[in-house]
Length: 115
Length: 107
Image (spheres, each protein chain N blue to C red):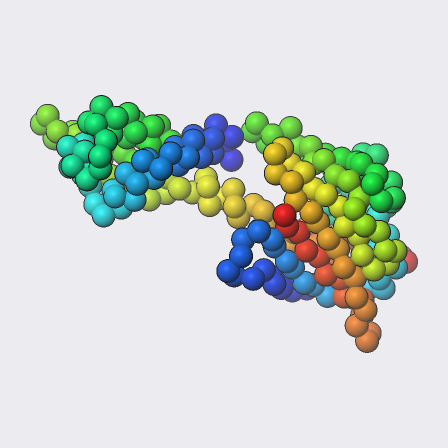
């Protein structure tokens, strides 16, 4: 699989990646929203509820002075289409957005992460 | 990457005078007096800035008689580059894992 870096070179405030996944959006959505599956590919999520405004944390491995905790809050949910949550690490507040679109024969998922 | 190392790099580069001194040293090795002549900063202040840059691993020095020459450590900036790169590689790495997971899932 190729992950295409769509970040505009002139700006540094957001990163944007586009990638094709040969799976139905409904299946990809499960991987994005079920804690047992999130743990498998992203990070263990604590207190995850698929509800706008719900706060949860991702627990990464502590590194150096960082406790490994990512403070998150669901900002937008459109089932099988878009999931957006705040992603806070220390003082750095960013927003992660997953946008799923369907191609003719495959599900294509698009993820963007940035401030 | 050790947090203390990246902290020292960030702290060293947080000061505009130190950034200017570092950039100036990219032109080539220089003694404290040479640097004092290039900036409107006292010699003790330049020495202090150089000590901070050295503590962060951004410059190194050698003695020649009574003079001390400073030069840039090209790889000193690496902790900063690594730190930025971490955020650039995070998603591609995890998306790769996502695809492997999707292959395992039945529906």
